[in-house]
Image (cartoon, rainbow, N blue to C red; front, side, top):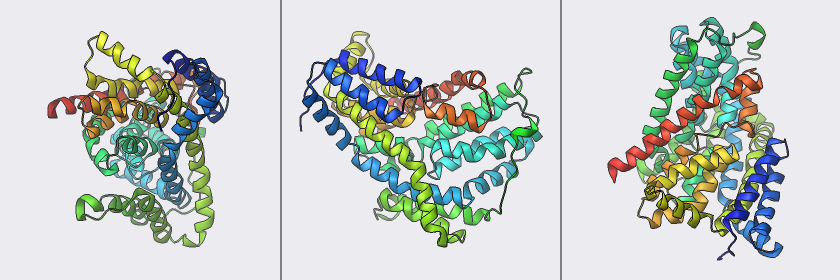
Length: 421
């Protein structure tokens, strides 16, 4: 299907309206749908053409939505079995108080690598991280940044929604994109450690109070049992490059969840766990539908061509479209997932037409999308503020540091492309 064309003005107005509605606590799905309708109508199309383009955009999201929904099995199993908390606790204890910042960042990174959504991973890490931070006499800002930066790094090399959607848009293997993003992820992780240690030296930092520290309730599985689910999922995902056997993520991720339930002796709770997992990922899936509607309008507009013309007029090289698109759209949507998806869906054709390899372009977009995803109009900002008991103002002050972590990964991905070009 060749969708009708709308003006860049209409598409941008629709996106801005959606952003403002989200800032004022409108449900993101409805805000995106309304923004898409306004974008199409104001962009010069009638309602029929607008709805047609929205459906066209949503159709492109079908497989990523399917992947996200099936990943709920792994997410639910990891959380309900206590595996996320056990992995975080083990890593932090292994490093000790002296290396608390590194331990907290690594725990967040590895949970994301295991396939746990970044906001859920940080919520799981937060109680342990705050307890260790209190013992190590760290301020809350340094602990929070270690978690947030570690989550950004891990998100790049995991089967998370943004990575899945970007890989699908460029038609590249998910595991190949994860491998390509390894060096950008390492760069982001190291920058996280550096910035968190600088924040730890601030004398006016927020003290971690005793009431901020939660005691674990209930017994946790062994580390080996907790790690079984992620190990099985990643092993299946890597079976193609290792053994030439292709296992689709739609199969690999729920298989990891079932393996987790078996290893932690909670297989009898499968129905309860999968219902919980579905409840945790359904919001992301619904958001993808709204994102798809906006992507349909943007993809049907002249925004892509106008953006490219502007960069050419400014003498910006074509390869810069990828990281810049990821950065700008993640900021506009306050979401790595929505930003990476919109950027990939909109500019995949342009980037490949410019001779940029799909894998390189996907890596630069996905890395760029971790830069401005923490803006206050997004759910990620609120979720992480609640998890760390930070006020709106204190949480707001971490955004520049988080942006620097994301920018580091975007720069690393771009440099890696230039070195291999």
